[in-house]
View (cartoon, rainbow, N blue to C red):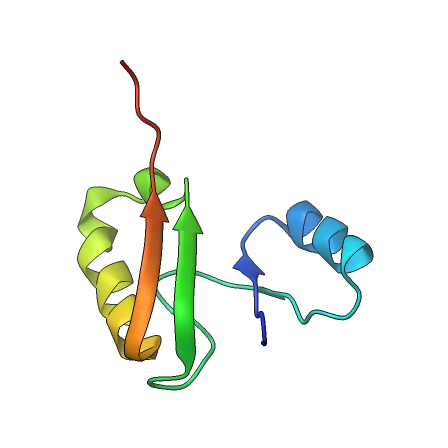
Length: 82
């Protein structure tokens, strides 16, 4: 299994690199993932899509669609208040 985490805040990426030196981490944007078409088996966007400005959502979901392999799963989450 391969894991290619991508995050924007440099401190988060540096902390993850230190904690998991065997994984490759990169900084990037969910609207421009640095990966080829149909390459990813899954995308985990947990508690991150709700911070995306509404006008960027179509580009972000188009990028998820472009990079997910057939049968790939986007795992999305957002805060839920009662």
